[in-house]
Image (cartoon, rainbow, N blue to C red):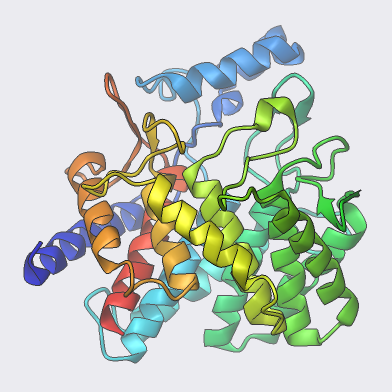
Length: 401
């Protein structure tokens, strides 16, 4: 694709997305927010695990959005706000270099300050360090009911990275101190399990969910940020053990399964991207580059197995559909983190162009999933729009470097 055409394509796309998200005040629906329904909360079914699971999955899988008629409100989501904040920080860095297509430094700083304040206000209370959860109850299989605001390492890690990016711009010490306190959440509130020569951090404060590789690596990522600013050796040591366990779980071809349970044995695109991002962040923050071989092998597997020749992103290594919007978004962010943007420029261009063409509404928002049959074209603020906002902000900054 000609450079001028691509530039026009992605900048027009992003302008529409940015306008849409700002007009919605960054609040919206989520694939997993079904239990926020005022109708469901009035029913006795809310006390039955199978009913909760069926209700959530029904909302998540349906290509038709029933949220208005079932009284599910649009709300802010902490991970979504973190992603928007990360995106605005990238736009600010672009503006520092004189690239102000999406706002001047002063205009972008207003968004950064406002989103930072909002993210801080969404912090879960009563834990050893700063942590964040989601704005809805959700049922993960029959075993786990995560009540609203139950903190997870995933939401917390995105919040930590966003707050640190915000601090680097605003130099607000309170923001940095809050972000760094999340290391206490990881070490004191999450459980951890020895695995091989390393360890695995749990997904949340609930027992029994210490099997997810990318979640454990996000715990390592949080600790590596703490080490970068505090030089607390124990934080680097624990982070390294989590990275060791994840690398020992990497298969010979560079791939990772999602988790250790039999029902978690799939290999998918965006969680692979999360793994690579987290390991590289650990290396950048600690100066320990001993895992480069695993990164190189993982990156090669990622770009060679999750994308078709026309740039179409695949969900699984052996199956394309349903194409989740996370897949094209995450490869841009991971390529930026791993300094692969220019090397993989053709792939990223094709993937972004395919995504804009096939997964963006004329109103500006991005769709949740693209399927062979009936696609889910519902606008989800965290899952779809925040991820693409962050991704295209990265793309804009990288394209200007």
